[in-house]
Length: 589
Ligand SMILES: Nc1nc2c(ncn2[C@@H]2O[C@H](COP(=O)(O)OP(=O)(O)OP(=O)(O)O)[C@@H](O)[C@H]2O)c(=O)[nH]1
Ligand SMILES: [Mg+2]
Image 1: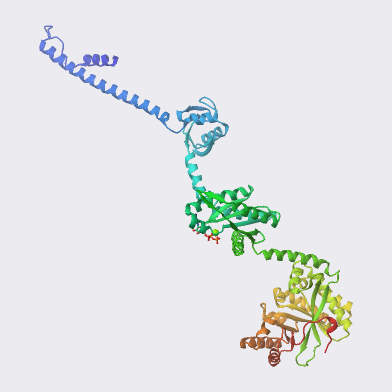
Image 2: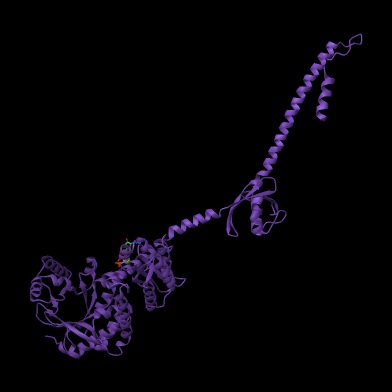
């Protein structure tokens, strides 16, 4: 109202057109009217301007009020706080968070939030974090406000989004029907379990469980009954397990269990039995009686494989066997392999005492010199008369002896015994003794041979040492050195099993070796295959080219002998000439 009066006064005072009374002191009515009309016009204009101005101001005020309500109406929490984390403002939607945080406007935010407020303020860069509040998860954006000393907090409840993400992850790793882990998750868990077992020297097992004749249940009772049965089986399997075990549905009617940290095979068999029992309980589904059974393939890790593929493949093979055995049973993967492991362990145990118990004996395989027709040499072959078991094949116990390094004392015994028997026989025969890969790598091999010769009194020329082609070529440079030292003793050397490994001809040429022995597998085919004849002929020529004698092993027929003679082979051994025999039966002839 004041403004309006001021404008009116100003306009009246300033008016240039108002000329005042004329010389006679009289103002004409006409002039007055004119003036009045002008003033009225001006007043109306001022009035209009004022009205517009008030309207404008009211609008701005209204807008400001609206704007002030904006954070209030925000469905998400909005807060303003000072740099030290004191809450200065919080909208309505912040109430839940403030309750959880047990704070209010004018008080401090929780320490973990205040710390970030301080950081954000000092770095003047926004920061975002996820926080759990009760059962909810919030995303919090800390926004510094330049030059104001404030930090704004914008929060958003992302619980639903997190849950959706988790449910997607769950879906990707679980089976829809039963809710059990699926093959993907199972494989991840199995991988961890195998690594754990390898690292800690533990044992675990996979039980691969497949329902028997499930197709029949589907066909006779319907697919829905089949589905319901799968769920029942899933529940029953869960009931059989410890918390550390995993059960999964791999697909169709196939389930799998990872049994972690087991002590021995009987514990695995124990769980398999209890699974078989649980699965085979009769069930009534919607009025249909079903009598399920299952077969289980068992694979033990890390023994049966150290990768998920190997372990699962093993379990699958075993499952196949369980089905073949008539179903409703379990089968260990390569059960005979486990038996073989046990057997090998027993052999190793018994081998340790076999020398002292004098259970080894030597037999001899005489060799026939083809040019003279005389038998003046023999190969010593070890035999083990295992108590209660009869003679055990060297093919069975030598690998065990090599693995356990027991071959070293056994080999020493063989050498000493063969030389002793040669001496005892009084014959001028040459005895061939095999050296194993393990013996060949022993530092004291040359001393051992020298010592054995000295102890027996047999001339070095009466001893031939046989080394397989594989051992000789494995570390050919070292072999050559050892060969030279042995030859220096006066013994002769032969490359055994020639043709079964890979030979470097340049090494072979350099080796101070007097003989190569053609493996029986090549001899077997001569006479029946031209290429076998050609091969043996080539080896004989090769040997002769290197100034070596050639012995053919495993000669069993007259025809083989004739061909070998024709080819120019120097010596044969095999059943055709003589079976191996105890020392008393072997005499040089
Ligand atoms: N109800 C139902 N059946 C399924 C599902 N998935 C696979 N099957 C059926 O399950 C059966 C599984 O086949 P197999 O395990 O090879 O055969 P089986 O009849 O159980 O015979 P054996 O296992 O050899 O004793 C097939 O007939 C599939 O059609 C499923 O989700 N629900
Ligand atoms: Mg099945």
